[in-house]
Amino acid sequence: MNYNFKKYFPFVLFVGAMLILHAIMGFNGDDIKYAKVLANQSLVDYIHYRYYNWSSRVIIDGLLVILTRYNMIIWKILDIIIYTFGVYYIIKLVNKNYSKKMAYFGILLFLMYPFYEMASAGWISTTLNYSWCFAFGIISFIPLIYEVQGEKVDGYMYVISFLALLFATNQEQSGALIFAFNLLYLLNSLINKNSVNRFNLLATAVSAIALIFVFTCPGNSIRFAHEVSYWYPEFANFTIIDKSYLGLVTTFGNIIEQKILFPMFYIILSVCVLISSKSKYLKYFCYFNIILVVFITVFNTFIDISVLDTSLKSLGSVPGFIKSSPLMAIPQIFKQIVSATPYLTETLKLFTYEGLPKMGIYSISIVVLCLYLLISSCIMLVKAFPKNLLPFFIFVGGFVSRFIVGFSPVIFPSGARVTIFLYVALITLILMLLKKLYDDNAIPPKSQFILENAFLIIGFLNFVAVFAISFMKYGIF
Image (cartoon, rainbow, N blue to C red; front, top):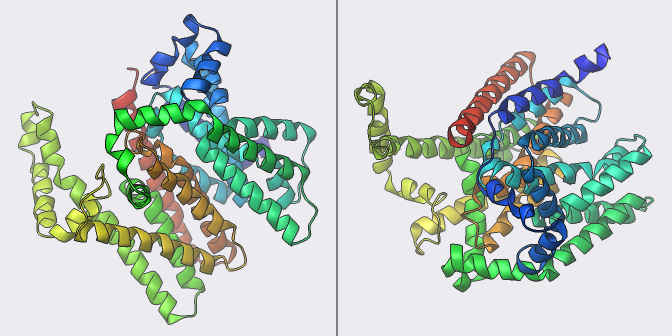
């Protein structure tokens, strides 16, 4: 027991961090509304109504109204357990021969995720629809993960994975991802003439049925029409190109605005290709990519800081010591920098623009930039893992899961919570890249020390920021 405790101590720390974060969570948003649902009707009546008038997420909605009806303690315990298991199996997928160092990297990466987005529609409402679907989606792959790693799967794990499969496929994004990856695994088995995993066959069929269930649900079309008229009336006239623009630009807008996980992924990926490549042209390509993503991240930060003084003034009464502080000059300095570069400023501002901009040099530039980041990421992933297409498919799957939100009228009200599957894809890929660099002994010992401490500092500071934002926006105290 002492050995296992030390071995899995990274996950003990993760549970501790989640306990601290969950301590400040309280009812908010849609949770308040759902808590009253079962007071006047039965669960069966509610699910029947939702199916025919609002949503195909009958399993998720049913559990949601049950959990919101009672004290949040039950949900908090379940949320920590389920989310931790999802994190554990993501790390296990990458970390075949368990390395505590890789486990620490994985935990720190997940602490960098902006978890406060899971409160945007209410803590319980959002987590059940997104973080639980991520976790249960990963758990549904346990039989395949174990098969790839040559481990025995106990009978009860098939039952748990099947139940997790039913829950995760009840949400459109996770259902599509589960179907796609199970189908790829099945096709790979058939092409290589391997024996077909029966659970893989079952999961492919179940996820396909779940998608059919989504497309044929009468409530989804009613909800779509309502959301168009309520949230985004102009959406009804958008073309496929318009919706593709929204999907592409807002996807990169979300992950670039977060300023941590995508730049980290892009830089580490570029370094990985840079180290392994012998082509000078490919090396130049990687150098350019590193400079590009650093520049975008830094300049985007300049834009954010430049509006800080305006944001403070909009709060009304600002304490005198803040107004007179020398730090208040910083936003003015950055405002002068961004105003001196209108082309860059107006282009990057489109990352957070809620709507379709007029066709012009700025909109064309932002599309070109997003396409470059997308295509260059794919090229570098193929170069970094020449004999393994899984990282490429993970990135494409994560990107598509967020891109298709551009075809929904609630693309802007949904916020960044719908980006969770892309964030998980980026975390998984960063971990795979780090493992490759360590396995290939591509990082000198001194550089390893710097990298590990940098991760520790960034992970800790990000968690503090996540806690602070969660406390200020959604805290119960």
